[in-house]
Length: 108
Picture (cartoon, helix red, strand yellow):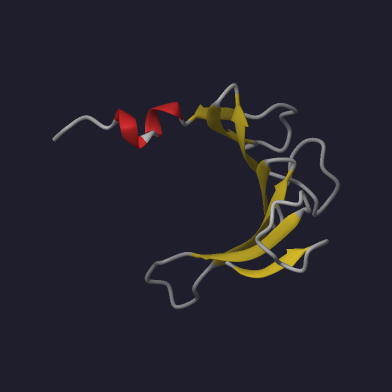
């Protein structure tokens, strides 16, 4: 991940509530001679993480503006919302991460 762009603080690590955006490139690890990649951004906004993939969007988004994944806290549970179909208004997947807590790990 590269290119931190904080619209208010200049990239500081404070908790002032400023929207922060981080650009990234996902690289496909394969045996093709031409390595494929997808670029996008992660934005921290209103206590949630919004993930945008370039060329992708959701039902409500203008071109180039769509969020396809949101990570948020709801009722004390971290969860992931995914819009896997641009023609669906609501998230196609909602994943509660409560069972991923390390204190829930069973002994080996």
